[in-house]
Amino acid sequence: MKYLLSVFMLAQLTFANVSVTKIAVNENNDPYFEISEIQVKELPPLKANHEALDEQKVDLKQIAMVIDGIIAIGKKIWPIIEAGKPVVDVNMGQGVSVIPFKKGDDLNATFMDMENWSAPVAKRYNVTYKNGFGAKVISFDYTVMFQHSGSFEEKGKYLTGVNVVASNISVAWGFDFKASTELVQISNHGSKDDRVAGATFKVNYTAETVFKTIQSADTFHVMGNGQLTKY
Image (cartoon, rainbow, N blue to C red):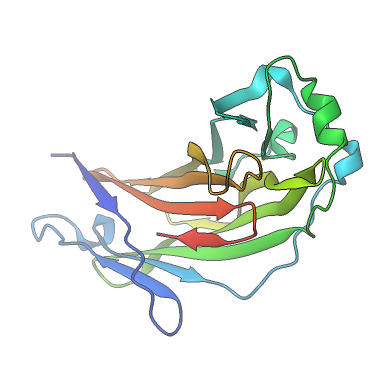
C-alpha cells in the first residue's frame, strides 16, 4: 500500500557541510524501491551567470508579495524539475526581485534607478537519495543565485535575481521525481528609512515509488546585505 512520508530537512552541518536524513524502510517491500537516506551537500563555489541588469524589466503582473515599503516581483512558486527533467522557463531567467515600493510609484523606473548592485552570487547543493541497498537512485544539483546591496536614492539594500535552478539530474528506473521553489515571505531587516530586504524561500522536492511518496524541503533566507542562510 502506497503512503505519503514528509521529511523536514534540518541544517545539520558538519565539517564537510553535509546534512543526512535517515529514513526507516519497510522490510516487507522490495529494498530497491525503499528510500533509506537523503543527503544534502554544499558543493564548491560556482560563478553565477545572470542576465545583465540593464536588460531587465519589472513585470507588474508578477507581484508576489508586498509589505510596508517593500515589494517582491516574480513568481511565488515555480517548478525546477518535472518528471525527472529540468524545467526550462525563459520567463524565470530574472528570478525574484525585492525592491522598494510606494503606492503610485512606477516600479520599472524605480528598478532602473537603483544602483550599487553586487556581482551575482551563487551557491550550489547536491541532493542524493539512496535506496534500501545503499545504492544512489536519485541525484540532482540545485543552485541558489541572487544579487544584493541594490540601493535607491542612496538608501537601502535590496535583492534581485533571486532564483533556483536545477542541473545534473539523475533518476533511476522505477522512481519519479519533481522539485519546485516557493517564495515564503519577505521582510525588512533595517529601518523604515534605510531598509534591508530579506526573502525566505523553500526548495521543495518529492520522490515517488510504487510504495511511497517522500516530500522534503530545504529552507533559505537571503538578505540585502548578501547574507544567505540555509536552515
